[in-house]
Length: 192
Image 1 (cartoon, rainbow, N blue to C red):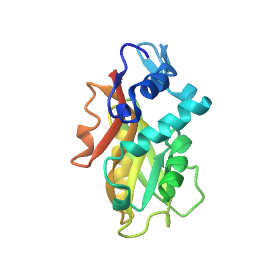
Image 2: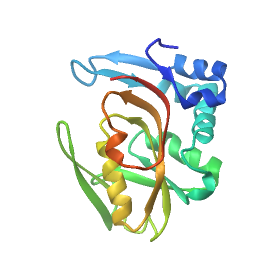
Image 3: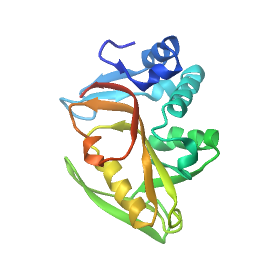
């Protein structure tokens, strides 16, 4: 396990499993630009044991009971990689929250500001039913911009947010605070 990765709720699967999974993480300095320490969890998905531990950890660390939400929404792109598998484990449907222009019309979208410009997320216009309770999942919570935009989008569609589930949290960036009072879980945390 990298010494700067702090096991949080991943401990729920047991220390040995948690250490095994976090040993698969890698850091890439200077990617995607100088000064960034990119946290890559793709090796976890490439490893059958690591992937099983990840899904078990996400399920055990749900921020709310599974019967308190109807579906799982994954944020593009990495939330797509484990979100459907988690939804299937929980007996839920999956909602794809995509970047602009990736879904056929009609869509409902939400614009938001990133540290380096503007972006937009969209869902198909019938993806969320009125009153549907949604758990939002993604690999990383940093500044919270994309997750906040997904929150606004789900609410715009008539859904309600049950909570958030993240694999990693970057410390010191206050992303979770920007999401409001929703229940949130993160498996591991590390310095930004």
